[in-house]
Image (cartoon, rainbow, N blue to C red; front, side, top):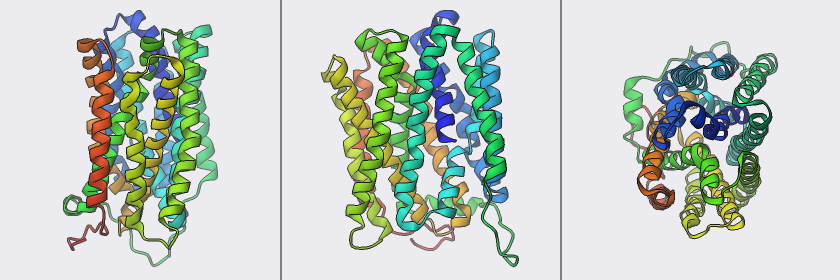
Length: 392
């Protein structure tokens, strides 16, 4: 699911140069187009995950992927930029509960001591999807055009939705278990009174900003910096994502083993988060390099650390929330806030490129923010996250 989701997101980033010429888009307009799916995505993060907690991951998983894959098919048929923007907004509707589904499945089925590794492995689907979507998109665009790219990826998602419905089952509930109630406004308010939740949220916001920057702009950055063609960009981008996926699993697993070598203590996972965020901050070194090998090495290393931080931070949230039955909604609250910031990333980067003629300022801003987030995670994430008003 993660791979298909991010493959469909990558479809736009690799198609953007071609689409930009077809629809006569400026860098600022490209930034707005890149962020368009996030408009509906972040608005529906919380409502969709509230429904997820009530009906389970089987129904929502199939429905979500089916909707966004249909949007991909429609995107390939769009005849003007307005029609295309509407399909991207529908894509956001479908993708809204994606990470809530993942967090719910991990909470339900993974052992506590393995959640960090499991979550990181699941999140490699993001990088595999970005790699696969970018390289497949590059060749489909070169030989068949960007419309074929969108329709082919949409067909893959529709097939996955059918398989998920047939294969996945929600955990069985006890017959005397009370009916699950949706999260209340009071419980949401109590989340924001928890320093641990706020620390996790800051990390989520910061890593989301960089994630969406890279996802939206990396192909154009490589074209701008290295002067390579669409297929060359696709190959280089895919190599970064694949290297990052492998590196993230190794980094996450090694750090988890070190932190928990004397036993499981969930708040200690913040040390994994902070270490990985510090590694991701090496993205600020990019302006110092102008040839392919060092640029790809810095990008791969920073993305590996970013993904490991994401996996550890998500696992930290699942560990620290006391009421696991509302894990989907808690994830939805987190994503609503982080995606509100994330949707600004492609837009702000477009303005930075238009004003300065380079990406340097964007990379520096991200590096500073990641270091600050690491320090806040270390100082704030200590006590369980409670939604009943008790001090945590």
